[in-house]
Length: 405
Image 1 (cartoon, helix red, strand yellow):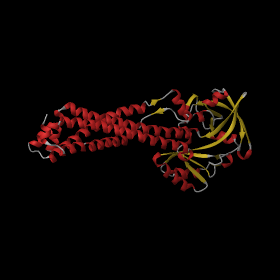
Image 2: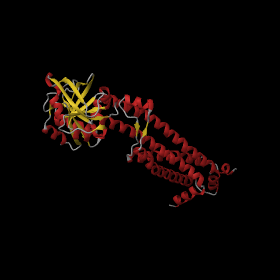
Image 3: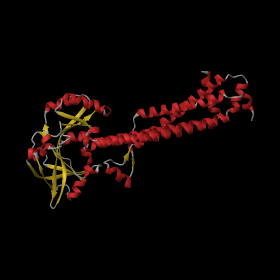
Image 4: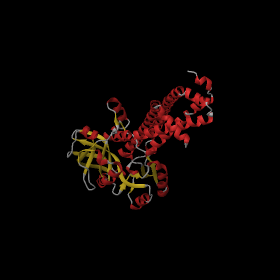
C-alpha cells in the first residue's frame, strides 16, 4: 500500500505534468470511442435501412421463387405454417406479402411499378411503413385504396385522393386490371423503391391478381440480429425443403460486401488512430522521464533499489492511465449519446451518391456499452505497454550521470 500512496503523492507533486499525461490519455479514449462508435453506428444504421426499407431480416418463399420471381411461384397462406415459424422464440413477428409487377397509369402517363400486397399493421411493425408516410393517411386491412411511393406519384402526377389504374398479369396467366384511390404518399430513402413501389391491402392485391389466399413471401422480424443465420437455419429446418429461407445478406449480397469492405477500411483508419494515440502518450512519457531524470538519479544514489523504483513508476503509470481512461469514458458518454440522437447528416452531391446506392447520408453513433468498455481497455493496455519505456530507462540509469545538471 505504501507504494500506491507514494505513487499518488508523486503524481500531484507536479500537477501540470500529470494533467498533460492524463489529458493525452483522456483525449485518446474519447477519439478511440468516437471512431468505434461511429463505425458501428454507421453499419448498424445501414443494416437497419436495408431491413426497414423493404427486405426485413429474413424472408420465406416457395422453393425456387428467388430465381424466378413470378406469381406462379406463390404459395398458400396458412395458419399452421405461421405457427411453426412463430414457435421459434427468436422470431418476434411476421407479415405476409403478395408481390408482382403491373403497369400503372394516370391519364396519358404510365410507368411500370411493383405492387405489394400487405397486412398494413403487421407490415408497419416490421418495416415501420407508416413512418414513411408524407401525405394522406395509412391504409386499412379492408381498404380498396393504395399507397404510392413519392417518386412514382410524381412521375404519374398523382396526389392523395386521385385515381390510379393498374394493368398486369395475374395468377396462372389471368388478366389483372383495376383502378384504385391513392390514400397516401410514401417517401423512401432508397431511390429504387421511391420510384417504383405501390402498396395495397393484401386481400385487395389477391383479388387484383386473381390469387385468393396466395402470398409470395413471409417477412420475419427477429429478437437479435447477431443471431441472423442460426435463426434462419432453425426456421429452414422447421419448414423443410418446400420453402427457401433467406436472410437479408443472401437477398442483398452486394450490401453485405459493401459493409465488409468498409469495415476493413475502417480497421486501417483505426490502426492509424491507435498509432497516433501511441505517439501522444509516448511523447508525454518522454517528457516525464527527462524532467525526473535528476530525481531518479538521487533516489538510486541514496540507496533505493532499481526494482522498487521500477514498481513505483509502474504504479504511477497505472494510476495515470486509469484516471485518463475513466475520465475519457465518462466524458465520451454524453458526446456519443448526443450524436446518436442528432446524427451527422451530409448533403449535396455526397448525399446523392449515397442515395444512388439506396442509403440515407445519415451517420449516427452507436451507444452500445461494450464499445466504451472495449476501447477504454484498448487505450489502457496501450498506456501500460508504453510504460515499459520508463522501466527500460531506469534499468539503464547511471546515478552519477543523472545527477549532473
